[in-house]
Image (cartoon, rainbow, N blue to C red; front, top):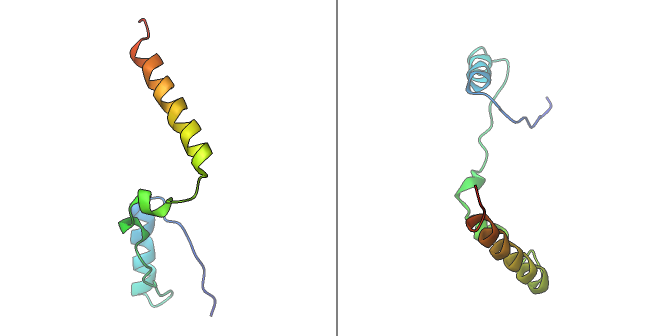
Length: 71
């Protein structure tokens, strides 16, 4: 037997996988749900302080430009 990791991009595809499992052709394995982790926790410490500061300045400038735009 071989284990294969797939990404389901449609709920109909997941239903098909469940049907294949019901026919005893495949077995769906339970995986840990990574979505419970906050993004702030996931990416904590990934950027250097200098890069993070530069990004904050850029975001602030971009927001100011967006708010001051003429339409």
